[in-house]
Image 1: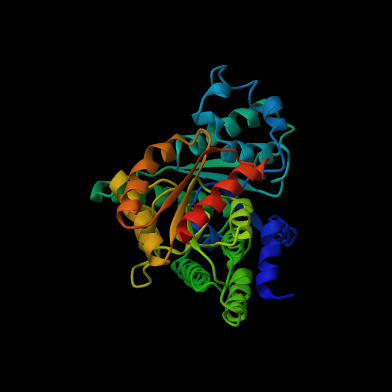
Image 2: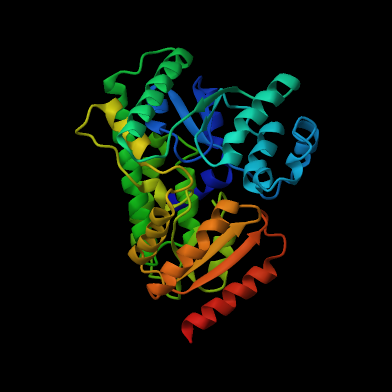
Length: 384
């Protein structure tokens, strides 16, 4: 089996590496959202593991463990009806993440932040649920000096909590080693992105590799990714329209597979399960803890603020990978994206890059025909 196929296997069976780590006596630190300082958790001896949903699993446990405890208005609330977030609740309540020792909720959009309350209340009300100890990792998204000081304080608090929970001090040496390993992962993910832009890796394959890097130890991922880069470099270049994907986070490859089945290649994306994972390598010239605090402050959460910065990010990424068109895929009830997309589309169209807007989409693509028809027509328009 080739390295790329092996990495895709870790993506499909997302608990394989984590359960092996646990079986060997290690502790697993789950987290949601992309703003998690993984290096700090790794230096404390944990396996950082990002939680995701499953479009095929449904939401049956929410009726048993969530809605009875929620305010009666919440089931109809758009904020609390984001299916990719509710899918994480479904997975936790159903026992899919029974291998977690702790669960960190970093600052993110409101629906993600609300998981802290939902899990806390459910943990107290239903002892049979295997919900791990929770930690809320706060931060501010303001880019100013005062915000940096606040965020540095939260990193220091998190370090102290990790040391108390993990059982050993987090030294500069351990931090430096974790930073080196994390930066190597980012370098390899950048290589994967470059090969995809060259047409040597499918977008669905690349997205699986990006995700696998969050489900397994970096010491296991990095050698496999290095081999995958070498193997992919020998592939024949894929031709066809080059598309960029923006919008809601995609924790599965279903949309990419559909787009690429239509003959295009997804060469980039702006959501936080994709290429942005390779952004902002840590500064190895700075003291290790300061480097972690700096990245924590500078890296965006799953949302970029202000709007001008979000628009510039999408346009810059689309241009950098040579995209001929951009597909905006937005889940139903994802109001933040509904607010951002018009400005992003206008900027892309002004830059000569056509766009397709797939609005109010379900988390699970139950009927692919309408999406397939829209993508097919978009590709035909690009060729005309």
